[in-house]
Length: 640
Ligand SMILES: Nc1ncnc2c1ncn2[C@@H]1O[C@H](COP(=O)(O)OP(=O)(O)OP(=O)(O)O)[C@@H](O)[C@H]1O
Ligand SMILES: [Zn+2]
Image 1: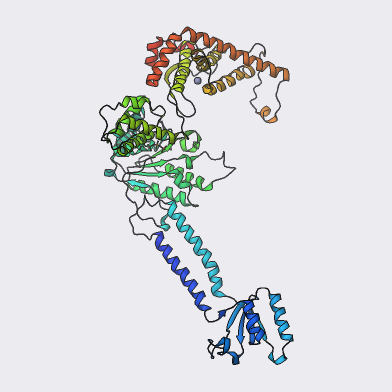
Image 2: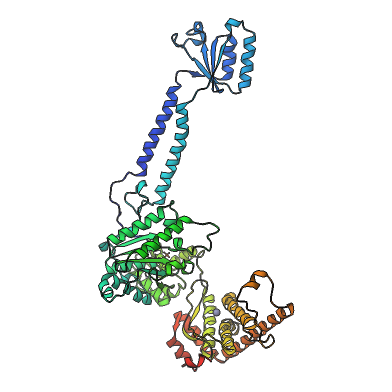
């Protein structure tokens, strides 16, 4: 996430800061304490022992008033006051002269009783009991906790709204949106600041045009999309791209992060959304950017039973209402970013909401070079610095990582008192950034990269020569999500598959591992997804589609879902074993066949793998260059 270079507070009205509230409370508390102190100032507090051994033993006490069975007020005999031990008490003071805490009432009464029995009736102590309500104490006893709670609340509010982004943060306007507003002329980010992402930029250019020339579209009755969802791994430039759209269109940009909604109090999230949309509409045309939308837009229902987050749901509902509410010519386009598109609530993706989805990927080598170019532009570089080399040293790095490296490198060079940033500084910076990344990202070593390249080349080679495999569009060894490399196919849209088609697909999927075995003599864990797919497919072939001779025309598929819930298999133990055997031999046969194909075309496989290592992404043209035109026409694979 990028921090805004320039932002202006959107609320300019004068506001009382939480600190002034702290002061008021403090004064209040001190006043309360002072009242307690002075209110009891006239009676000296003594201890029970002092009382018993002193005035009680000497018989100086005239009256004791026990208050609330806790405290005793002592009145001395008038003739004792102002003399001896009591010299500093004013003669006119009618008492109480002392007070003490009686501790145990029983003990106290017993002691007094003992004294009384030894005393003549007319000299006995006058013992009285009184229930007194301590108004001040009561008030304070709830005022102090209240003050503490308010204090904590103010403190939390202060944290919830990081004051760095906002000029005046007022504890009473937390319902207002704290979206940051970037004024037109202040946001100078354009598409030139976004390196690579060429395909994405084409799609996003359209959005710029919607904002600039809405009538061109509305004139013909076309509906301008309201929401654009940017999906991609962290640091791939989603925020940057949204800002560039605002910059190119010259419209205000309101940004807020989904996670900010979540830490709010009940009802606040929804009112923030309302406020945000209101503001954006007032300043239309404009862009609302919601970062980390998954924080509020997570699929409802699924995990809800565990910990239902009503606040999140309210916020989401309010957002959907707002998006449905404004017409397509309002001139407000909502852009949202997430790195987990799959967990979003489907309600968000419905037409009229975020129906445009744009995928961003980690940059390829040439894109990384371009990003290095952007971020080294402001630096003073050594003349012999080779950006190509930097790009090839940083596979799997995101744009944000690269921006980070460039800055680190400059810091390192400065620390070393250099006049220009050199290659070595970049390498050290890379190490430092890797150390920070290691926890969240996969770092790929040269050796691993080679394994991945040969694995993907295996898939590509096999599917090129398998009649029924989908035709290949693109092969990449740029890591994405859980997988380390990928091949993109043009899928056949068949409804019915023949056994041959199934088997060819099995082979294509197994080809990654087969290539690893052929080229390195060992296999790796990198084929997990492939093997999962193969196993599932082989089982469906045998147990569902009746495609194995030994099982015959039986299907244990259950469209009603009963078997699954009843733990009971619809076939005998013997059949179960047979199914397992059939699956195994099916996969084994496919694997052997795949290896044969790969060995036959080993030279081409190697050529492709090396090209992948060099370019990281290889397109259909390159594939044709290596393998020649694919022999199977598309129509031929689409089958009977
Ligand atoms: N394609 C790119 N070209 C130039 N700089 C880039 C690119 N991608 C990322 N960056 C740099 O990385 C920084 C962070 O990117 P940004 O905040 O846009 O990523 P993001 O995809 O929104 O990440 P997150 O998912 O973590 O919010 C940018 O400010 C920019 O400096
Ligand atoms: Zn694979």
